[in-house]
Length: 460
Image (cartoon, rainbow, N blue to C red; front, side, top):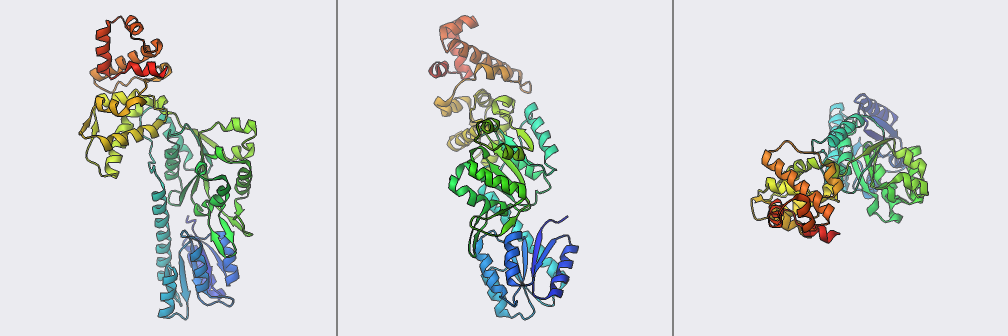
């Protein structure tokens, strides 16, 4: 079923009726207007995906309406002009002012349908290209084979086909954005708009305009709710909203319509809401800084994204994935990480989660002068940021048996020494006693495994 809306504007009732019936038979949602005043009202209220606009009407002309609407937003719907008194000059003027195409009466059904279809396709392509430019991390697939990631994939498969609103929570950099993009791609709205708005990056006084748009007389700036109409709207970091904006958002979500800031006409919307947060929202509701009713409305279906430390066995897969992605997207010369380098990175704590890992891989691929990036080069680039895994992290690591015996043995030894280094606070004498090893041999062993005992002592 096509859920795209077409507004037919013509002062002749027969034309409105015939065109509406033709488009409805093709599955479009159709509304109509008989004059300029009604056309303005429905254009602002319905946010149609396409407008069929007659040039001659009793109270105004289509060129005037076209000029007004083209000035409002680059995201406005395409407008197809129709006229029974068309001239070459009028058609040229309409196209120059921003019309998608010009059709003459009597309308050919075949040409009408083809033009409508192409106009809607052009808008969809424009929306997709705009969104691609906005996305800094366009990844929409979960990488890894760990039980945590497999469970997350199953949740997405179960939740995505429905219409429930979803709250995705997790630490910064854990992959919440990837999850919401995966949900959208697997949803029934995947061909429609996907709009993300990072609430934490917008000054508080501008959030209402960003979400709902602005209206001043005939000047209209559309907000993210209108831009996402028919598709998906992602509200990133909802925990940062102040109570005043929370109240406005709750009202809009409950009524499925809103007023633009400064406007008097209610705007209806049809969007699926995905929200994200790295905060303890339940705690904020108890403290009175987040509305409980808004939380329950957004949290219809919760998804928790695990921190990277809880699925560290996926780090080799993530390194391979992001290495290939970065090399291809930035046209860099070929590089690969050695097994020893991958094992070294697998043992880092990564407090910034997957985002920190990806940024480090990016830095390595840009700065490295060798085809194979070895452990020494990786440790050198990591520098003072390199800290060993904590006792708790070591205990959580799932052994990786899908590797050669030598690498598996090195992995165990690295985890073993990191564990005892934490226990001894980097004291080499105490470590030698714990491990029953001579200190000279112990230093040599730690160096071979890429472990710097000073990093533990300095951290303490």
